Image (cartoon, rainbow, N blue to C red; front, side):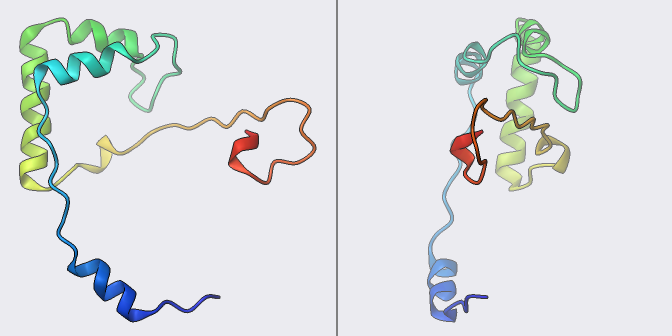
Length: 103
């Protein structure tokens, strides 16, 4: 096991925290457009198609932006917002899978 230099950790702790940029309605809409409607369901069982449909309602977009910005301002991102489902699909005809690039 590799020893950690305590001075390196002190230096990291002294660095200022990065400020988060707040969400905007347009930024959210632009980001949603990039997602493929055929992606697999997440833990909430919603597809990107469902989310995009919900976000066509201006009130829903504004509420989502408000919630996200409140979380940023409070410095708290609820754990259920951090959950995801990952499915690893190996590339065919590989003799080993000891590197992430091989999946």
